Each structure stands twice: as structure tokens, then as C-alpha cells.
Image (cartoon, rainbow, N blue to C red; front, top):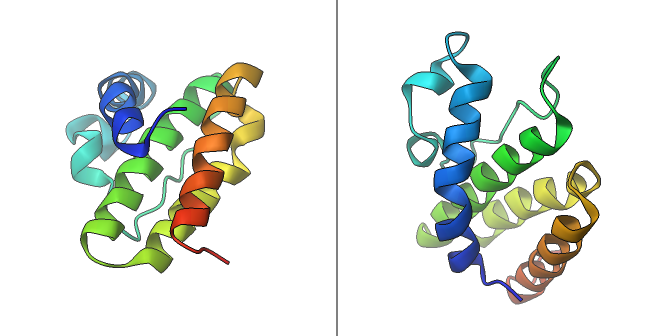
Amino acid sequence: MMTARRLTRKAAPVVGGLAFIIAAGSTPLAAQSLSERAKCGVFFDKWNVKGAPASTLAMAGLGHEVLAANDCISQNNPAGACAHYRKIEAALGMMGPTVAADVGANIKDRLRQLDCR
């Protein structure tokens, strides 16, 4: 099972690149790195972009929400982290079955660790 920190380190560069490709020239997303945008309380809002593969958007959302949840944790805001992890949980259906199974198990573990209700 992948830890949240390991997931962040592995996914962030790839997700940042994907987000850049998806939004190139159309939104401020292209001008900012994923880690600069992914702050506690700032939710990924590009789950449905016309013409973009759902799985690519799901991975971009995953990276954003994990980084934002980590930011909430660093700010001692577990409720905010829970909200970000719930967004990932809601998007599991957009991911491939293997990724969804691995990510889903990690997200459930994080929700338990943070005592999310």
C-alpha cells in the first residue's frame, strides 16, 4: 500500500504535467505549478473538461487533492484534509480499476487516521 507522502512524490510531477497539457493556454492553471495551486480549502474544479479523458482529469484531481490535504494537515486542519480526501473518494470511479483500488485503500486509511466522519 502506498503512503500519502509516497503517492504525492510519485504523482505530483506527472499530474502537474498532465494538468498543464489539459489547460495550456486556456486557464491560469498553465501558468502555475500544481503545488502552488493545491492549498487547503482550494478544491480541484476540472473533473469534467470537454474533450479530456476522464482518467487524465482524475489523476490531475488526485494530485491536487492529495497536495491540498497535506497542506491542511500541515496547518493542523484535519477537517479540511478530510474534505479533500472525500473529493478523491468521490472520483474513484473515474480512475482505472487498478489505480482506483490502490488509491481507494489509501484514501480510506487516511480517512480513518484522521478520524473523518
